[in-house]
Length: 206
Image (cartoon, rainbow, N blue to C red; front, side):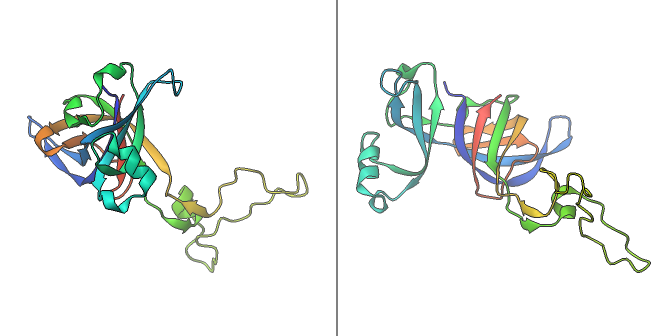
């Protein structure tokens, strides 16, 4: 039905496969996502559904948002996303889309906001090896010379220097689904997922 859903990163643990092998997995809460709005090719120029995730108190949203949520049953949500679909007739306003759209063995792309590291030096940001540790060296973690002599007489664009690290949208592709538990809306994917615990993620079929 859909190829993308909203969810939340719950944390990491280990999972034992049938042969007894232990693999690292990330536990994701996927859905339930509620259809808020249907966007048609005639009106908006494309076919898509707007879904909401993580219910909130309807009394704490403004009046325009309250009217927007009214058409789908009067429940408000903290997060809204659009999902392009091929058949709009398969969806109804207020319909819940749950984690059972995924199955064991599926390959998924997971997008999330990476952890913010603040202003970081070149060793942490780019993996520089650093300077000498002994013999009177006073240049342990600095980037070193960045100039280009008289020609061209400036620092070239793209030079690896200290700066802001993390806090960006990152997509990890082709993660394998190792377990799906629809009764808990929980999906286990093999490997790491961007962000810290309770971060909102987008999970899409590969």
